[in-house]
Image (cartoon, rainbow over all chains, first blue to last red; front, side):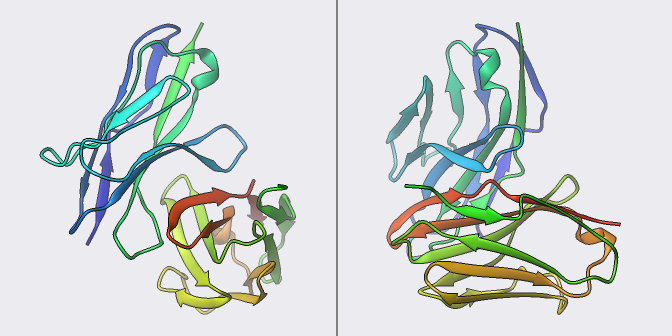
Length: 112
Length: 113
């Protein structure tokens, strides 16, 4: 079945450092890919998405490129802030299926 | 838009009691999802509905759990009887057909003692 694998956390960075959170997927067909973010005490919210190969999703300084050849969707940000501290979830939805398959989440801790 | 609304935000109950969690999806959305989040198991999809009809309940852990959606603007997740291992944060989410973005509510933190 479809699955998503994320790097384990926590990822601990200093403010203004470069961030990469790895995500790879296994799916039949042509899934859409997502990054969701969960701030402490809140529900998940969509950060960015890409619906086909080579698409780049971006939002709030975060970027991820849909790489079909490596089945990856790594999340990057050039300069993190303390306010970026949260749990980040990679997810996919496959064609014709409304439900999302989530990774296990990666906690990011950014210190001043 | 008010977003997805869940109530209560926190629930503390004793083992054996019935618990009912409530969700109001975003108006116009035709999919509704119930998730459970714990440290041990992460985020799990319990059940989801399309146009008020349950589509996939394979994630419901056991018969003690049941979910209903009597109309397009309301859903409940019931646990009867509750057990300490049901302690978790329960999220409701909704989405629009053919738009795979799901909008999550703030969650209900359930503690069963």
